[in-house]
Length: 413
Image (tube, rainbow, N blue to C red; front, top):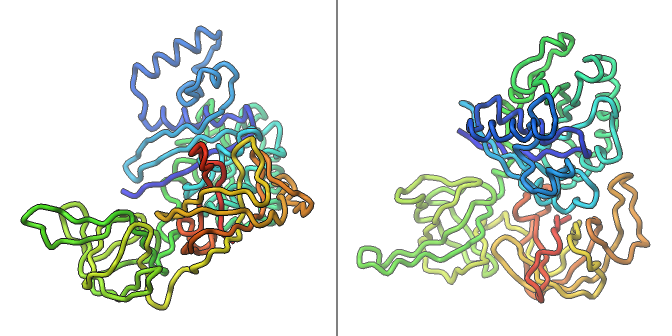
């Protein structure tokens, strides 16, 4: 079974947590004692229904305020596919949390309230998902039961969103009317909306095609660790462990190791205790090479005539994640794949208004939760691809050297 990672986003009180609770409940991913606890809490609050949002809002402050603050990860599976859900917060002051949760997602699920239609937050979430190059987008028009399952209300919201998404880079878009509280069109098709002829949400999640989303053309293998067993049986074994970030590696392939530029061939590929013929994203493997080259953590295995750009000058979109602003000439640590270096901020070219897509060239700094285009100079060469081609080799994080805290996330232009 393959794995689908999807991130949910939406305005406060659009019903994200309730929707995830409904998916978990109807797919039998909840234990009886969990459900009983949620039912008891719902009765204590005076509700005449089971508040499924309590299944995902884990922080006490989230349950008290009825909002999502931190990213909550939930797992469930159906006979067709495994799922990892990142329930991301919708409020503007938690933009950094949404970026974190959606950065590895295959699909973005944006919820809107059928009574409210598209809001500023809904558009902002779509912009962020587009910036993060999430390849599949679903707009779930929730609370259709509160508008009498009216087709005209749904069509107006759908047309509004499709027109807005045309300005973004959204390769695949699906719009589904649902009621998370009642379960309409979440797991099974709804009898209350006979005018809707598309799939239920879970059916779409089970069947959306993600295999071709990963870059299977450009071989990228960042080395994490050199494997040198000390036992007598493996005294001459030397392999390089890591996760394949792009392309397909096969035994006998000619490869080049960066930054040295030396070439060799793949002698073998090991997965746990067996040898495999090929490796592709996102497999974690040990690659053995025919020649004894100087290869260490942070190096990259690629094809001789298809290499990433080796550069010390980085041009990227950066989401800033801490209260102390990002300013020119600031010094930070940078981590890109398995490679670490130090960096200085050369320039902040513009600040992006993620509500209107307006570029503000006068922005001289980036504040908390702001996104802008930044140029950096690093102390050593990084092996970069554009983020739109490879989300692994095209992304990095910025770290405050004094505290060790992650303060920024970058996407290479």
